[in-house]
Structure formats: C-alpha cells, structure tokens
Amino acid sequence: MKRFLCVLLSAVLLFSALSVTAFAAEKDRAATKKILARFDAFDADSDGKIASSDALYILKVAIGIEEMPKNKSLDADGDGKVTTSDALKVLRCSLGIEDMFSSDEILEYLCTELNWVKSRKPGFQRTRVDTCTSMKVTAKGAPLSSLNVTNMEYTAYLKRVKSSMESMKSLFDEEEYEQMMAQLDKSIAEAEQVYTPKETKRTVQSGTSQHYYYFPATQYTWSCKLTSADVKDVSLVYNDGKITITVNMNNYSYDATTYPYKSGQYSERLKLPYGKVFDLPTYNTNSDTAFKAIWLKNGNVTVEIDASTGGVINANYAYDYTVDIINKQKTATNNYNMTVKQVSKMSENYVINPITD
Image 1 (tube, rainbow, N blue to C red):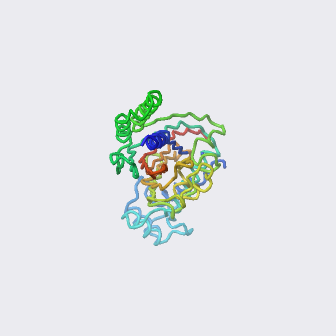
Image 2 (image 1 turned 90 degrees about the vertical axis):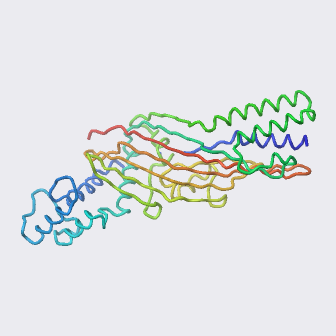
Image 3 (image 1 turned 60 degrees about the vertical axis):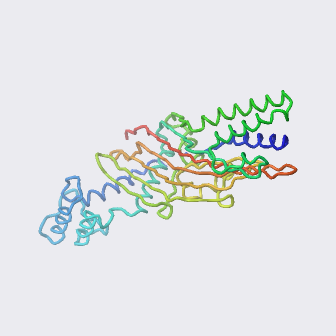
C-alpha cells in the first residue's frame, strides 16, 4: 500500500505540472479593390445597399432604357458585359438566394489579408486569453476503492488523495510524510488556480521579425491557408468603410495516431484544417504518460479590413479544445491508470497598427 501511495502521488503531481503550449508580399491592394468593385457593380444606384431596385436599374441599362452610368461598372457576373444575367444575379443576391462571393473567393481574400500582416509588418498589439473550464479525472486500478473515480474534478481528487494519505500516516516515516503532504498541498493550490483565465499581452513593433513569431502561423511566413473544404461556413460584409470576414470551423476529433501532438511535429499540425489558420496545442509526454485524444471545436476567425487602405485593422481567433492524457503506473500488485480530460478555451485578439499609404 505504501508503494502504491508513492506511485499515486507521483502520478497526480505529474498532472499538476501538465503543460499545454498553444501557438505568425507587400500588400496586394488589388485584392481589396477587386472586392469593392464587386460591391460597386451590385450597388447600381450607389445608395450603399444591394436591393431589387439595383437589379431593375441594371436590367434597364441592359435593354437600353437607361444609360450606363459614368465611372461605374454594372458587370455583376464578371463576364465583361452588362446583360440581363447581371440583373438576375443582383436580384437573386438581394433576395438571399445567391451569395455575392463564393466561399473560395472570400477565403482567398482572407488569406491574402492575413498573409499581408507578415509581409508588410505593420506592428500590432496581441491579447491572448487561455481558460481551463474543466479538468476531470477518471482513475482505475487503485487498491483503495475511494480512489477509483469517474469524471471527478481534479482538485476534488487531489483532496481525496490527501485524505487517504492522512489516514495511512503510520505507513511513512515523519520526514517522508511531511514532504509528500507539502507536495500535495502545493498541487492542490496550483490546481485551484487552473480555472482562472490566463491573459497575456504583447506589443510587436512595426518592421520587426517578431511578426513571424507572434502572429499565426507561428514561425512561418504565411498566416492562412484555408480553403472551402476546411470550413463550416464563411461570410463577408461591407459596411461603414470596413470589410468584415467571418469564418466558422467544423468540429474535429483525433486520437494519438492522427493528431501530431509532439512539439517537433509542427509542420504536420499545419496540415490539419485548424492548423491552417490557428496555432494548436502540443503535449510533451514521457514513459509514464500518453496522449490519448483531442477534440477541436467552435473555431472562429473574424477579421476587419479598412476598405480605404486595404489593411487589416483587427483579427480575432478563438476555439475550444478537449484533451485526454493518460498516466499508467505499475506496481507489483496493481496497474493504476488515470486519465485527465481537460476542457479549455483559447482566444486571441490582434489590433493591427494602421497604415497610411
């Protein structure tokens, strides 16, 4: 029993120290101009809205009832001509039947803009918040039935371990017992702080190489490689001089064979849908621990672009993730197995310095 309690203490202390590490071309102004040109073509009467009245105006131009406005293109479908098909496309868009931009068009524009942050290096202020919302233990194989649990919060389990050790104080010499209890008290105090959101801030100066290390994807010259196959949905809105792109991701689950969880497997994580735009967590394990599974959920990227300059002015990244880590300790008589399921949220906000050209 004494041997088991020592092994158990080693296991719970290991999880107390569990570390999760989550980890960025001169601006192509033509990309933003292309987006604005599409809006301009759809907004035939230049009232700032896309409505059936725009479709009617284009139809009249197409059949020769109205003259083509000066300094304006009404070629909504991009075929180089103004025809009744342009009027139909605008009408369908105004009714919500058809989107003005395809998902691939929006994502291509998004990638151009996010990649610009690293090529132009405008400087930014980053605020990151990591929050652990739950950390639960499932334990099997303990000789004490009270230490075999399912989905017990980690702090409660540590307190139960402490209570069990207090009841068996006579098995230890005094110095050994005091050291073990001190370690447990420290772990309990640390565990109680796990649920406190951890906020970090960083200012990156313009023109510096820090853009590669503090803007996703970390250590690479690019920031986004998303395609329509990677996302759940995507939208683009133009209003009040800003273009806002919103991307929502699908949910994904991986086991130890499909998720590259080791820190040295960074390039492999970049191939995952979330890895094409987010920095993803890594887990360092040892001979007593094993990565079991991870779930990536509710991924969202929202980017605001200044329509007048074509520069990104704000970028928000967020996703939730749940990870299972296993600790398996063997004694002469027991195979003690403990799994910790940690549920966390990650959010990052980047306020990009304005550009003037």
